Each structure stands twice: as C-alpha cells, then as structure tokens.
Image (cartoon, rainbow, N blue to C red; front, side):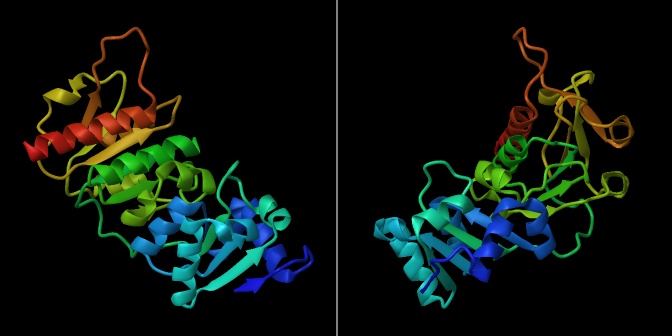
Length: 261
C-alpha cells in the first residue's frame, strides 16, 4: 500500500482531475467507482481495479479492510490518503472512504438487435439512466444502446443510481438508433403517451427491444415511425404520464412476466 500525504503529488493531482470531470474520465478511458457497494460488485463480477484509493480512517472499517486486502492479494495498486485529501475526490456525502479506478468496459461491436435490449433516445437525467439500467439488469435485459444525447452511462451519478447493474450489461454509447432499428431482427417497441396499442394487450413472448425517449419530448418522431409497435401504459390516476424510469420498469417486468408464465 502506498500512502500519499501531499496535494502536490502527481498521482493525487491525476486522481483529483479524474474525480472532478466526466470529460477527463472519458478521455482517459477510465471510470471511478465510489463506495463499498460498487467496489465490491466490481471485484465480484469483473476482477481487480487499476487502482484502489482509500481514506486512512476507513481502513478501520471491516468491509473496507476486507476489500483492500482482496486488492492487495490480487496485486492491484492501493493508495491510502489522509481524510483531508480523500474528501475532495468523493462525490458521496457521508460515504465510506473507498473508490476504485477501473478501465471503462468497451463491449465488442454488436451484431445488431438480436436479444433483449434497451434503446435510450436522449434520456438526459443521470438518475433516470441509472434506474433504467438497474431495472433492465434485474429483468434479464442484456444490451443497452444510448444515443449521443443520452447521459454518459459511466458518470458517477449514473453508476450510483444503477448500483452495479453496469457490470452485467453490455452498454453501447453514441449509438445510431435509427440504423439499429431498421436492421433489427426482433420487434422494437417504442413508448408514447399518444400510442393506440396498450402494453398489456401485446404478445411479448420472445426477445424484444425497448425504445425510451427524452424526459420531456419523448421518443423522436423519426424513431417512433421506425418502431414495430408504439405502446402506451394505461393508468387510472390524474397524472399526465409516468417518469421514464418508472415506465421502463413497468415494461421490463411485463415482458418478464409473460416470458415466465
């Protein structure tokens, strides 16, 4: 374990730059996992990080100590920081002082829509994107395709909301959704508050691709026109519509229900 005590240390300066900028993370091809849950999920599902960073006070926490020991046993780089240096790196209020720096997973080029998938068209809120990923993973979805206008999936806020779902999904960013839909080998279902087809009236047995749109504007008209089905979730309340993350969860689990029946 290496201990850094100076703010002028080059390694610390690099860590601070990565922790403060999603653009810096993208350029470096790195992801920052902040907190015990994400770090443990990475170790369990993906293996060793490039670097583990721990606050000195957190080394007395049994959960943190166990994860740090796993990293040392696996010959990963471990850096300890005084609490005063660790605090500016973390975006988690009152969090446990442990984070991993990992290489951002880049899946191999997909062969098109052939399995249960999610397409996100301009979903901008990181919390919504993370919640959609979490529900998708829980429902057995395998692949996620994000348009250029969708929130960066590997940003800290999306990672926290998804609670480790990233590590069991193939995530494709900057995807050309129109081309994917046009060449799809499975039905593509787009949600719309103005659709005529009800979700619960559709036969969802077999793989499908779900298309969800921007929080305010919904799915773009050109993509709606390409979809196999345009579906609405019926509801009895006075509200105008569901939040996109809630809508996605309803769709995923209706699909799962029909395929388990």
